[in-house]
Structure formats: C-alpha cells, structure tokens
Image (cartoon, rainbow, N blue to C red; front, side, top):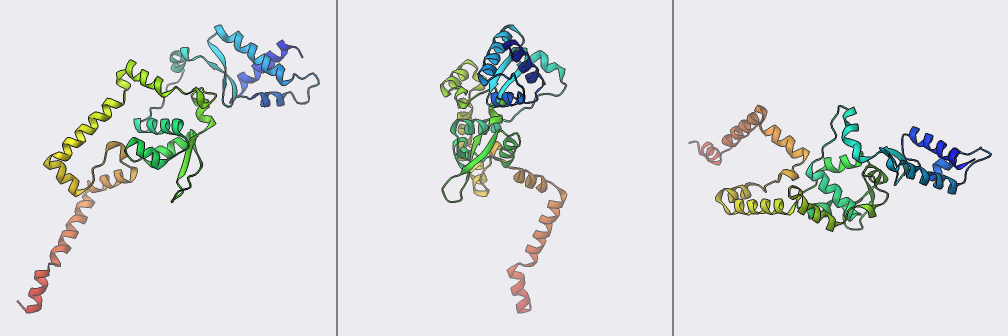
Length: 262
C-alpha cells in the first residue's frame, strides 16, 4: 500500500470517527489486509496530513486519546453559529475547584477547601465527575480516608491537551492577570476580606457572629438553600407559633402556682 493510499484511508477514518483515534486503534483497522501499512507508515501518513492541513480551516490535532480532525479555533465564532444552544457557563467556584485539581493533584476535598477558604459544594464535585473531568485516584492514608481527586483523559481531550505539562504555568497566569485586570483574583479577595473584618468589628457583625457563623456565597450548599427556602414559607411560621405556644404552657411559674393551689 502506497503512502498516498494510507493517507486517504486514514483521512476517511478520522473524518468518520466519533472520537479520537490512537495509532494502535488505526493499525487494528487494517487487520486482515495483505498489503497493510506498518505503524511507522501510519505515523508518517498522519504527519504528512497535519502538514497538508496547515493552511486550511481545519487541522489534525493530537490529544491525549489520539488524533482527530477538527476545526481550528480561529474559526470557532462562525462555526458556533450553526447551533442555537449557548455554550455552558461555569461558576467561579467550579472553575477554581477544577484548577486546583489540575495543578495540585492528587488533592483531597479538604485541601481544596483550605486553599479556597470556603467549603466545596457537593454539586461542584458531582458536576466535574459527571463530565468525566475528574475522578477518584485513591484515598489518602489519614483518618477518614478522604478521596484523592485527579484529572482524566477526557479533561485533556476537552481542553485540547496531550499531557498536563501543556497547562499554562502559574507565572503565565499571573501575567494574564496583569494583561486583563478584570480576571485578577487577588484584589477581589482582598476586598472581600476587608468587608468581612469591618462587619466583624461592627455591633451588627458581633450580634450576627453570636447567633451563627456567617456563610459566604460560595460556601452555601444545596441543603442550606433548602433550609432557607423552608424558613420563608407559611408552614415554617406555623411551626414557630406552635413551639412558642408549647413554651408558654410549660412556664415553671405556672407549674409552681398549680402545685400551691394559687
């Protein structure tokens, strides 16, 4: 089989495949052919195809799972208009959690909370796992055996990465904050800390702290949201009235009066 024939076959396979194809998988497709190419021939054909696509609107991209033919990112704004649905938007809390897993894996949920300073919602962990972006790599050998999380091959594929080494360095991220101040995290966190200290020093803050520990917006869990919703209902008011009535009937002074016959 000539190199041009191999290139045409591989191109047809990659255009028809619904997922990235590894060299091993591509090689298995030629099983049973008498004049089959070697794996070196397949790699050479893939390299030539990548060079041929250099000036086109699509490219042959190698990612963690293998090779795939895809539209170049420069043309994404126009291609995206083919679909009416809007791309998914992720919360700041989810992106921060995902970044910590990517850069500091393996990492436990408690370690993520220690860095972020707020609790991690179970919904965030569940969403990342449902998207197959993170998985449990094992359990840390400490009391409680917390799960250790790490990224998956699907995470690399989604972000067009071959290995984790291709992630931008932390220095590059800091430079990005300087170029785009609206993306910087440090100033925003400092402002939140200043507001929290001012609230704690005020009389209102002291009263709130005595009643219950304040919760940040990022730390509110689904269970807490359900409690807040319940308290605002008429049914909650009825429960409170009933409790107050019971408390009044159990007044110790009333009991002593009954005992003395007053």
